[in-house]
Length: 514
Image (cartoon, rainbow, N blue to C red; front, side):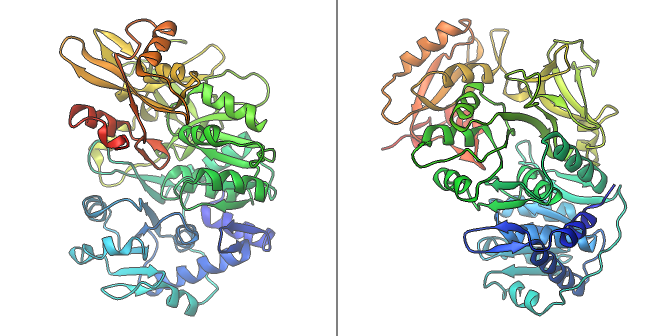
């Protein structure tokens, strides 16, 4: 099994002139990428950063994030990608818990970090690109330009930590998931085989933030593993994404369900040619099937639903695009991955019964760094507890019903928001929707649908309630429908917790035009 720095060395040797990263402003070949990672590894090593040291990567989705991640791999250091949206509270907790010795930032993120870095004496090295430096930081661009372009990779063991990715922290302090070299390499291998990628031929388009496991591991690192080329977008822009699919003849696109909603709503066949796509995947949250079906009709490519997590290093269940397919299924476990469905007492349930999904196999992470209690709660003998509800059918296909924490319990009945959202997405007037629970004195909570209408649509809230009542049991139909103009979205995912908080407090007016 290759460890990560061996994968990079292999591609620099085999594909030196092939473009690896393409942005609007630059293109890096594999040889150039290898040289830049060597230079940054030398810069870090000169500042005392070595094997096992934690290095924070507080960066947006630019090539520097990729260079910094892989420079750490060459050095044997542990890269810790940090959301570019994190601010003082999150940063303080993460730096304190990880004991990181260095941070790499740029001009967009350093202003926030600069205000707190003096609080951590162990954080001796702060490198800032893009005209940074000063106020406790060194100018990274100058240092890289002067550094040696050769670096001998540090040997690492398969069971050592290769990377730290942080959860969103919806339940408190963001937890650092410690992924091993073995877990990451196993998952990259399994994804390559399952997607039938062609080494040295695929062109990936990435618009998922690189500070996430979805963006960095599942897209950019999979691209590198397969010797592909990646067209990198710093942020989501629907028009640019579809234009670049056509411009670069992209063959691989992976995105959240919300991204597919945007593309379906804005697709114009006279301007957007999606015919080059060969592999499309979607995951990260429950997937409304009407949206995927519409995208497949527009593009002519089958979209594979995938399932996995940061705690399991990537995609562990993948829907087949050949042979038997089951719409709505997350697919079949790949490679060594195993799926268990258990009840609240961790007893395995029979085929067809709904319970919590546990993922086991080579993919499972080592745990949460510095948090034994959270690790004990989430990781057990079978694997990682997902917090998702689902079932496995007689053919072994996994179906995700919804997030366990998102289930709405009304009058003793369980309502799964995804089921209601799928009905709403079949209505021609609905562009985007989310179903959440709102407090109710009689029922405990009731379902509320929050909807953004398609351009020019005139459906009323009562129209949409009637649509749902015609297709769903009465208790599942939304008690009310709220029409808004702007859905709260972060990293191309709907922020349902923001909607829940708004319904508890001041209402949804801030998401409506004045």
